Image (cartoon, rainbow over the protein chains, first blue to last red):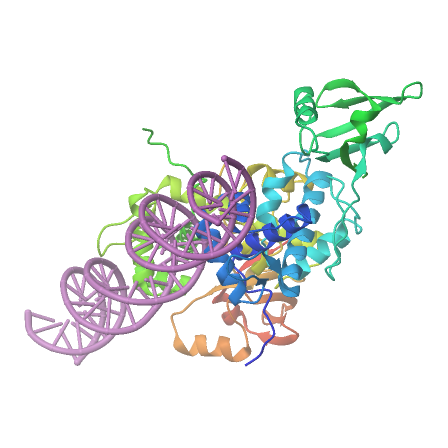
Length: 229
Length: 229
DNA sequence: TAGAAAAGTTAGTTATGACTAACAAAATAA
DNA sequence: TTATTTTGTTAGTCATAACTAACTTTTCTA
């Protein structure tokens, strides 16, 4: 009888849930991550996710109390980070070697990340010469499970010519949110800063074949992550 | 209401069974392929495989009658060949690019073959510049589903220096079978023909770090497939 | 050709991971 | 602070794909 947890013997479903919990905890650093949020993220009923939470809690990958918030144990976190590592390495492979486009990589990587073989993923990483970031600009965790987030910065601090991805907006005002979506920007939009006008600090930005001029105040309220190859 | 069969919507299990039936039909060209053989090959109980046969028959991938022999429909054959195509392309990738050895490739390819993406496999094939054979020397079927077997030849007809794989023995005599296994040869053994002595047509062969001398009569009763890169 | 062995089938059970419907607890608002 | 909404839980059902045990059909063999 051993108390060592076998990280290999998880079902595809269990893996998907652990990754989802990790992502939700990361994306909602301060707010509570609960069952309904998870159910929504996984596109299942709250009953289904509640079942899985119980299972993962009894298997010591998740720590949760009745009606309480969700957290991952050290083992659960490791499983999730390894999945993200695999996902990002495969996305990089598909994008750099197999002519996949930015928007095609995710769906296939979602399948490939569940392939069980340490050698496969480590050799794939070596074959690609240890890439630091995936096609979306996110850091690829190493084999030890070290996870680093690309820092979130204000759009107004991005340099001319750089490309970035919209990850959050300052949601203080409803007007502002409506303004953002009217322009056509949304979460994950890829934005290129075409020109910065020193006169009034306004920015000319390009995204999805459109161009717009935005004010410094607007750019101060939009948060992005830099994408670099 | 359409009568077109969706080749994409099969479970991993259904795919595995279809591939197994295809392999068994190929390996036992004349003999009857039935439920027990399939169960054995899949390492499940006859009840389980019988269930799946019914399901695949109702879905028109398999044609079978009660207590009768198994056959694949055209759709079933196509599913199986596409799986074999994927399996062999992945094996080739693992072997040629990711430092996998001959005996490591199968297990991982067994998982990778179930990834659903036409683009993935066609681009992988292009990336490797359309390889004709996999690391085991088997032909890789094309995207249209054309399947060609590497011909089975007598070991006595293999040229000096060539490498081949044992695929069958002439099983007329129990003595001979015992002789073969005593030497240490078995199905799938990789055999290199080191020397052919013209004096008595005996062969010096190497396999799994061993060397043996065999007679022409012995070599006439061992069937192999040539392996070429 | 009758009886035994092998091959195939059916019935009923189990685990996983979905679902709906009904209910309980917590959080928010009046 | 009570009422209402949101969030979380439980009970019971379904499909997939495995299992065992019992049974039937077919095929061998004496």
